[in-house]
Image (cartoon, rainbow, N blue to C red; front, top):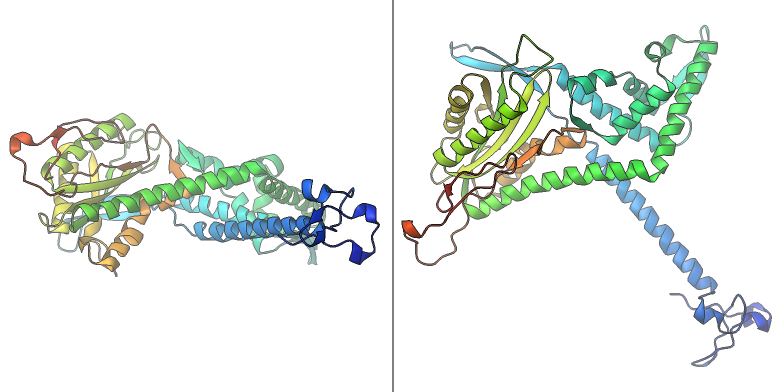
Length: 445
């Protein structure tokens, strides 16, 4: 801390100068009431200015860090919500073709709405103005204003109806509230380019109210708290997936990584009002699939992300990690596992997509060794990212968790004499999603 300023050198009255004895003579600091007040209450200009500077610098660094982190997380991808058409390939074999659905478009719309609202609250000055032109004055938006106009026109009601029981990003919810409160007429928003004079002025006032409320809510604590909670939840989920992969390489020096997307036929009689299976049925199928992985494959660990929409039904995105010393053919094992899901577990109601059969520019699946950091990084950031990074925009919030992470089925050997079969302790696995408990061998999976 800076030392106290000496009042004698400034020509101040002795009553306003501290006379308390210190080493080398009197203190002489400028005080509010003289005497020893500078020691008991810290009334020195130097202390106050230093504390203010430190507080200001801390706030600036926190704001800069928040802006940098916000910009980074706003680049997170959206969930890919595909339907699959079953047909024949060039060789006559059965094949599935992914088809983009309206759910995919709605997922992108949610992201664009959040990005547009964030850009507006982080900007300064007017977003909309009037400009003279042919036919009179018209609305002139800047770059943030154009994005906001597009975001205000997205079908909020249809998105929430198509993606029920979902948590949406706080900015998406706020933008809908502002639109309903200030610009409920969709016709005005759709034809803002052709409005002139009085109509343009009227819409300009409404749009400025939207901008004003967005910025006011941004300055409050509630929105930032909700947004920060969404970021921390997304980060925690992503860190959980990465930890599961790193722990699996601690348990086994060579892993066979498999990615499977499991889904169901849609109920055409009630579509799009009901999926092919209920949530209870889906959970029951999930328990059977987990049992199959444990009993029939050299399972080390798996992670599963659950999605739902009225057009595509339930989607289960699996990352399965097998013991690479016992399993080798990633494409073959993934196909056999998917066929068991389709024909045995779901009795024809289910379908699967074998991600291992895709041709990736960078190898991200298949056999990966613990001493190959590039392949491990590709597995985490190119194959596993989808399981966690998309929930910042929206996530399925039905009963239970949207992310399933199994226990460590194969733990490192601790050394010592090998135990006899009658000494092996059998435990019940903890199935985090639905609480299944079936006996298994806890050693040598």
